[in-house]
Image (cartoon, rainbow, N blue to C red; front, side):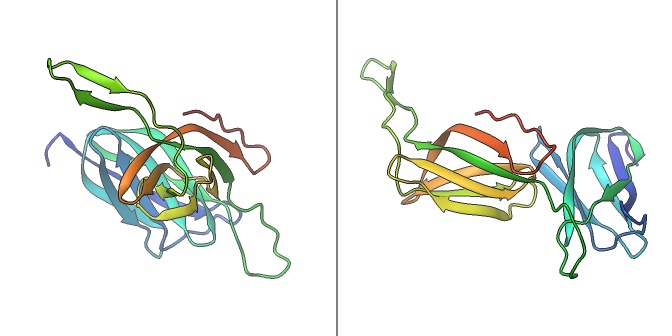
Length: 201
């Protein structure tokens, strides 16, 4: 095995009972290389992701009926790194079973034309002014690791939009007639008590 390769393994258990959880997806994402590696827990709650480059990864642990668990900037050196996770019950169909549910956030912002550039006759670059807000654009929040659609809406006449979804690593994409536009003044607001999210562009 090359010293440049690493592996990540561990066990995923239920926070309330300590029981191992099977069928849980463990995804790791390297922001530097845009590479994603995934593993799934077995009947004993064990997962293993092998033959991955040494580096720093964002980790997302997801499973049905459980709140997602995220870890940012996990260092994975050469050899095997053991990282165990516990998950809290998210939603339940059992009557009378109490649950805090997954952390939800509300994301608001504006769809803008964005800045455009063109090359002038003398070879210089001319920066055109922003074209203003874009109405009727489809704004989609996607899971940054899996690409799954988390929520979708359409911008109003002022270009404003609002989305609500469970807190995971995400990206926003604004499209209209096949053209992608910029999302400006994006702000995140926690909808779950006790969780503070700093909004920003």
